[in-house]
Length: 346
Image 1 (tube, helix red, strand yellow):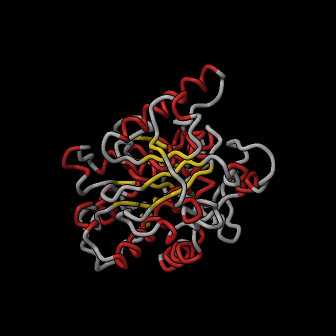
Image 2 (spheres, rainbow, N blue to C red; image 1 turned 120 degrees about the vertical axis):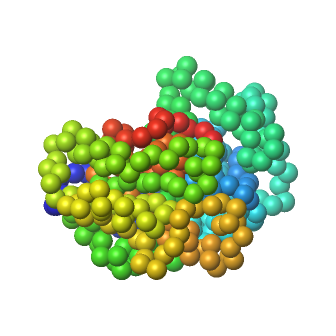
Image 3 (cartoon, helix red, strand yellow; image 1 turned 90 degrees about the horizontal axis):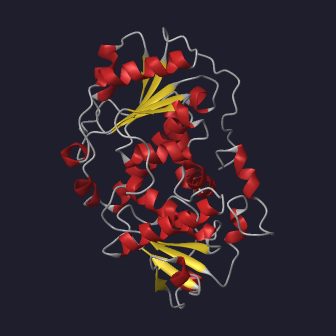
């Protein structure tokens, strides 16, 4: 199916989006429309210390709140990933070029974030993490900033609009190795035409594994099919001959979807010899650093493909679904959740 004319993202070197050009000006005031200027601030910083046990989507959603908080309070954003269970952050994103590098600030005294801006504003160098009692202070500090921003008729930092701005800035600085892994994965799967927006496709993200233990219910696959059909019809699309990219953690998903809708083309990165039946975080955390790096870069390839889809079906109970929604440029009504609505924290 050929893609209609639409303002979808283009590929410029290592950058995924035309809209990144708005961040090129390092002069001027620090703002959400000029994030690069924030990263040149020297006398006020905000350090996010990454945790060592949560999922990628969960931790990235928290990091983006921290990044948004730093811009809203006109601070330079720094990242400490020394204890991150996915490895070094600089294996995926360029800390030096993005000005997130911690090294030059290690000798500074950083104070943990408090709940209220009146307590934080006079502190030049702040830090936070999502471990222990600090995570509650972190969320409350963000909520208090948002109450001030709403009174001033500014967009809340917890909103999709603001989180998209900081996420797109971060995505601009993907490492060469990660970018090449993404491109080769897409090419090897025969999906370059979809990646380059030459062919229209829809996508679904289906979470199994440990997510179904406590946090979410197991939604039947036919509901994903029905939701895609409804969304496509609402967009005026012909659903007879259809392409759907399947992102998920279970190798049986594509086979089962094909049985439900044999006339559609289902696309996936899963290999024929895969036996994965779900993502289990405790098992992932025990993998070698090299294996984690490979799996995470392939996961990022899935994210990139899903962000290019014309429409997306997923479950907002999943941190990955919420992260994808943030990373997309398409209108918010092109994403349909089969359980709860989008929310910013946790």
